[in-house]
Length: 269
Ligand SMILES: NC(=O)c1ccc[n+]([C@@H]2O[C@H](COP(=O)([O-])OP(=O)(O)OC[C@H]3O[C@@H](n4cnc5c(N)ncnc54)[C@H](OP(=O)(O)O)[C@@H]3O)[C@@H](O)[C@H]2O)c1
Image 1 (cartoon, rainbow, N blue to C red):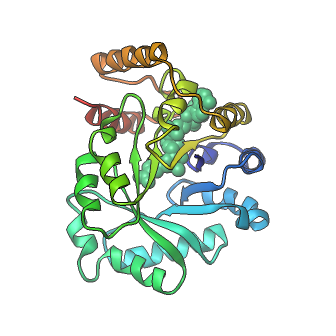
Image 2 (cartoon, rainbow, N blue to C red):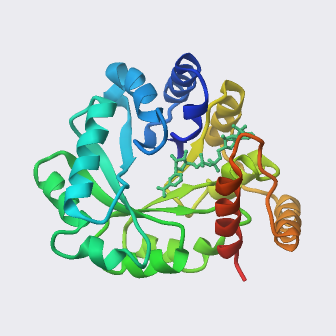
């Protein structure tokens, strides 16, 4: 249920990154998500994978363009950087504008299909930040899993995306469960998404204390009480009123603004 999100380890030492990932795997995390677009996340993860590849499902985001050649290049770079020859899940990060080109002959999707045929990947997934687009995209039946932003503020996915993905038998992976570190009440944020509607929450973790707290929660994620749910509703309403989340200092302004847009455009109306 608790998966490892590979972004924040780019900001800590290799020693710390390896310790956090190992602690997570020791305590049952068996799903790791990363991308060569996340700084040196893949290099750091490769240090763990050289010992523990068999213990985890690897999901990688293959960004960098709409064409088959772009995706082939990015897949190659991903395998080389992670020092693996196979991943369980490769995700196409895409938006509505670029989707037709990516799915057309010569588009990025073809590279994923070829890689699957060659046994380099097992499953093709889709990811994006626009929930309405993801709903349309999964109707094509071209993908076996979806990664979508989902937290107690940005909870639009609950209305149609999650039920549709479940009905179609897709794997459901929630990202930005902690609002990129800006969401109040992190333990409750994790408990909000864990039981029920999703398969895995890929939470970004780069500190042992946070990983341990998340692992404790994931071991036995108690459903939120009515009182706790109403607290989260109040916080969510306040965030929407103020039009922003409070972000931790290390996130760049443009990242914060981008995420704020995501958070606000995905809140349930
Ligand atoms: N389209 C895509 O496919 C896509 C796009 C973006 C991200 N992702 C994936 O999704 C993962 C999750 O996204 P994210 O890492 O950006 O955001 P996130 O999981 O919402 O937030 C991660 C941050 O939450 C904070 N945190 C985690 N556990 C905590 C705890 N117990 N208590 C307090 N704070 C806690 C940490 O912030 P501090 O370090 O500030 O304490 C951490 O850096 C990424 O790592 C990446 O693997 C996928």
